Image (cartoon, rainbow, N blue to C red; front, side, top):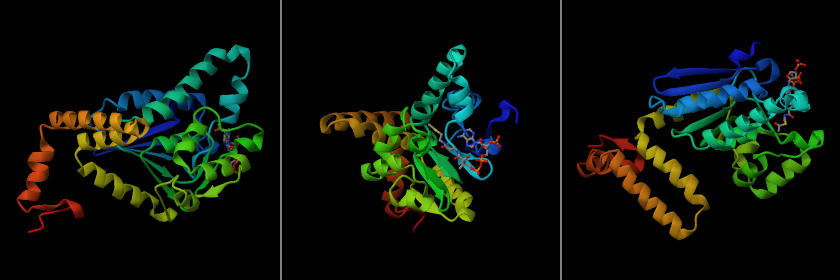
Length: 273
Ligand code: ACO
């Protein structure tokens, strides 16, 4: 398959879907894919039509990690130094910075294989929905290396340490069901329900206030590494920012509807009377 189509983008009324599109290579990430993901996310982050971003893989695989041939083996030579450095930088930037801090909610729809560097894709997404029979694996140890780049950092944060260590040392594959049990995935569903479940979540998110969603993401992700005083100060600064950017909508129409008896926010219900 030609390198120009290794990533596909679809838009459906604010719900954008990126599909890794190298099914014949199990969607392994080659330099062309890193370049296109980097460009796509640079553009999408300023596109206000994007209310939710879904990432998935074409065919039976989500992503088989870095392309062992095109990303590692063929770039090992001194003559490919520039492409190697560029690809590493792009690979790191789009997964661990641009995707991790993407302004709109992101959902990884894990439809099949998810190995090695693909863990940094899913840990950077806000929500991970896996097919129960998807196959996850920190396979690096099986070819005499380790989860390097930011994978080790990402799994230490998003997996319980005992499980991260076990799977990284053993290189043993595990299912989507297991990924949900240990908290790596938000949930696992039977494969035939995967698209519908992701769609349900995406549509629900599309209904929420986009500024409040962005603040929710920022406050959860960024205050995590602050001490108590810093976290409070940051949170209050965001509260002011939220009010300013949405012109006080949370107070006016948000709480206003509750006061008027038109909503029960605790149950996510409207027009209750
Ligand atoms: N890099 C490069 N090519 C890959 C990769 C990969 N990560 N994964 C699969 N492919 C290619 C195969 O080379 C093969 O190509 P070919 O048809 O030209 O020979 C094609 O995809 C299909 O692969 P098969 O092994 O034939 O397919 P199968 O469904 O039997 O197995 C599996 C798929 C389990 C993904 C296997 O290919 C595999 O173990 N791949 C390596 C996965 C891995 O360890 N990823 C971590 C990479 S390291 C990192 O991300 C930091």
